[in-house]
Amino acid sequence: MNPKKLSNAELLDRVKALAASERAATSALVSHLAELDQRRLYLAEGCSSLFTYCTQVLHLSEHAAYGRIEAARAARRFPIVLEKLEDGSVNLTTVTLLAAFLTTENHQRILGAASHKSRRQVEEILAHLRPQPPIPASVRRLPTPRSSEVSAEHAPATRSEPGSPMVTPAPPIAAPPPQSRPVVCAQAPQRYKVQFTATAATVEKLRRAQALLRHQIPDGDPAAIFDLALTALLQNLAKRKLAATDRPRESRGTASGSRHIPAAVKRTVWSRDGGRCAFVSQSGRQCTEVGFLEFHHVTPYAAGGEASVENIQLRCRVHNGHEADLYLGLQGAREKRAVYSVVRRRVVTRTRSRPSGQRPARRSRSSRRRRSGRTAAAPDEATTFDIS
Image (tube, rainbow, N blue to C red):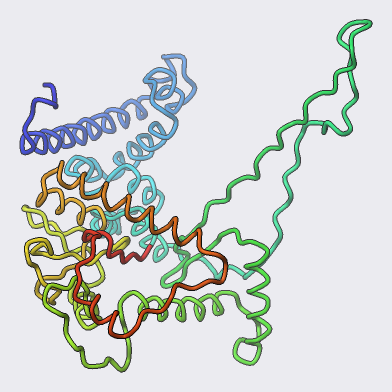
């Protein structure tokens, strides 16, 4: 059936049915691979291992073959794995991570604890099963990448034919340095390994902080220093973006028709919505996003919605745009965003063209008071509030 001909509701139902069929097919394949492995039928097919059979005969990718083989061998020991794969409570990644730690005594408990968990959450379960000792702190310089080619400066000139001009080879393109991905993984209960690549400037800041904090952190432990730095950063972000303060002043309210959201409203809305997107689907599922959050008018500002606690909720950027699409219609939302994009580009251009060190002229108090009642041209998504 052509998915383009389906209605929204039909498409959603169809995708769910297909996903259920895929889980059932995966469970069946894992079950059959377990029996094939038990009988070692891959040998008669000219393959030295089940992995070779899966990749060369079944044409599975290496990653897909590895996951299915691990699940098949776990299912041979614990048939409940097949049931959980079919109903979707665990997936191949979860089974692969847990397979080596499942025993007759604990497999039901561990598989139950891992149901519908993400990879990171499963790794935290493993950290309880196999706690690792703390990793000693270290700061080391990465090696400078070298090109395997001879540089043009030292490469000998060549002559293709007698009498032809000398030709100097073009300089080789140095291989880019390997990209080291940040690592955050659980090592033991309440303990994580954090690894990333820092610039020389960041390392210099770390060393200065170690020197200044010797009376407080004598061993200069980077983990303790980063914890202090992140605590201070979060306090600063909360004050700047959430209007958080230990001594809130009494709100003077907002002028009728103003788009400004008072600090008291921001604090209350953030606390009430738990710092996550408050969008709830018709089926009752709430969005789990905690990044790129924005303050959203439930009754749109264009329809007279006020910046009150009752009318302001947190939305992630995508759901804020989705609700704008629903209210304005797709075409209207596109036009609105296009206008806002032009306005923002002009503002950025004016800011960049301002001479270095020059600040905009300060408006008088009466001018600021007159402008406070005006409406802004930017849509809801312009009030950006993101934690990423």
